[in-house]
Length: 597
Image (cartoon, rainbow, N blue to C red; front, side, top):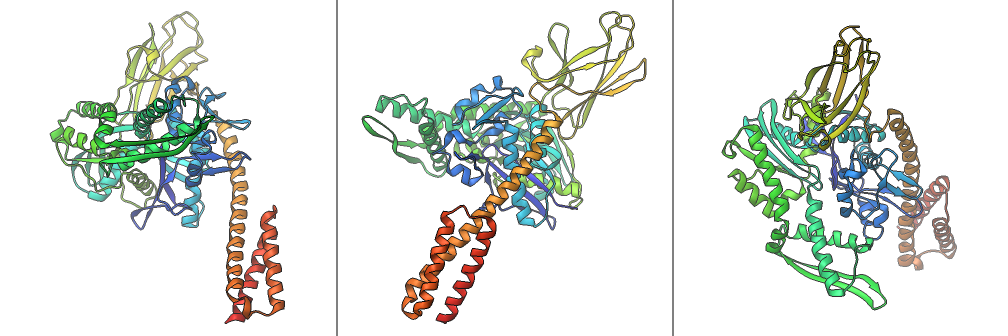
C-alpha cells in the first residue's frame, strides 16, 4: 500500500507531511524548504513555475504570477470582487461562473491553479519517499462551504490524487495536539492564516477529539493586514510624489512585498525602515519611497482586523456553552498568529498564556498526516467528532430559509424531510439547497438546486417524498430521495452554479498529467544543462590553475571540449545530446585530474 500524504493547502504557503515509524514528518521540497509558497507563475513564453521560483518573479511579473488563489476557491465571480484588490493579476468571469485567471489565450480556474500547487507537493513527496503517491488527506478552513470543499477535492483529483478525506484546519491542529499530549483537556484552536480565520473549541482526550463549536471568516487573514500597510505606503508615496499608482501593477506588487516584510519584521522589532528605490519612473525621473513604521502605529492600523477575530472567539465560546476560564489551553496556528498584538489580545480574551509548543506553519499538515496515518492503519485510531460549520437547509414559501441540519451539529449528520406537490398531477418537485444562518434564503450560500422527477400523479399534497440530507465526515453534502408511494429511490445530483462536471475534472486531470510529463522533460533538460555548466566551470578552473603542467595536445583537446560545451548550452540541444556531452566532459575532467595527480 502506498503512503497517504497529509496536505495543508494554504493561502500563502502549503505544507506536506507523512507518518514515518509512528511519528509525523514534514516533506522537504525540491528547493530544500519545509513550506512551499502557494504561488504559480507563468513566463511570457508559456513556461510554468510553482513555489519558490514562482514567488521570486512576482514583483517583476505580477500579471503572470498567481497567489492567494485559495480565497477564490468555489466562489462565484460576483462574490469575489472585494478581494481583487489583494492580488496583482487580473481576474475574469470563467465559463463555470467562478473567477478565472487569464494567462495567454487560456483562462485557469482556481481549482486548476490549486491543482498545480498540489501536484508540486505530490512530486516532492514522491521524490522524498521514492514511490508513487496517489492518495491524500487535504485540509480546508473550517468555514469553507460545500462548494469550496468540492472545489478543493476537484483540485486534488486534477493533480492526480484520490482525496480520501477533507478535514478542517483547526481540527487537524487538534489531532496534532492529541497525538503529542495524550491528555484530557479543553482547547481553543486559534487559526489566523494568510487568507482565512477560524476558531474552534475542542474537547480532547487520549483517543478522541470532539469539536464543540467553530466560527470563522473565509475572507480575513494576513493578506488583509498586508493590504492595510499597502494602502498606507501607497498614500505616503502618492502624496509625496503627487502621482496616482492605482493602475500600476508592478508598483502595487512591490508595495505588497514591502508590506509583508514590514509585518514580519515588526513581530521581532519595535520599528522597521522601508526603502523602495526606483519604485517607478516617469518624465521627471526615478521615484523612490522611504518610510519608517513603528510597532505602535502598526498595531493601531490593524486593530480592526484583530478585533474581528476576537469577536469570533467570543461567539465560538458562546456556541460551545463555555466560559474562557473553562479553556485549558489555546493553540496558535497560522503565520499571522505570530503578530505580538494578536498574541496579546488572544491571551487577554482567554485569560491564560498561549501554547506556543507547535510550529504554527506546520501543525495543520501534521494533523492531516495523522489522519492519513489513521486511515492507513499505521496509527491508533482517534475518534474525530467534527461539527457542521453552517446550517444546511432549503428554501421554502416566501423565500425563507428553513434549516434542516443546524450549525455545530456533530458529523456525520443527516436529516429527513417529507416534501410533496402543490398542484394536482405535478410530476416534478424542485428543491433549492442552501448553507448559512440568514432568515432570507437569498442571503445564504446556494449549494444548488435539484429536481425530483417521475412522481406518481395525484392530488396536490398526496405524494409523500422522503428526502434525506446528509453531511459526511468531510463536510460534503449528499442528498437522496425516496417516493413512499411508488417505492422508487434516486440519488440526487445537485446542480451547483459554479461547479465543474466530473467529465471536466477528469479531462483536466489528463491535461495536467500530460503537462507534468512535459514539465518533467523540461526539468530534466535544466538539470542536464546545469550539470554541464558546473562541469565546464570545474574544467576551466583546472585549465587556469594548471595550464603549465599540461601538454600542448592535451590543452588543445580540453579547449575544444570547453568550446563544444559552451556551444551546446547556447543551442536548444535535446536530452540525448546533453546526456552524451555530460558523460564526455566527466571523462575529460577525470582524465585531466589523473594526469595532474
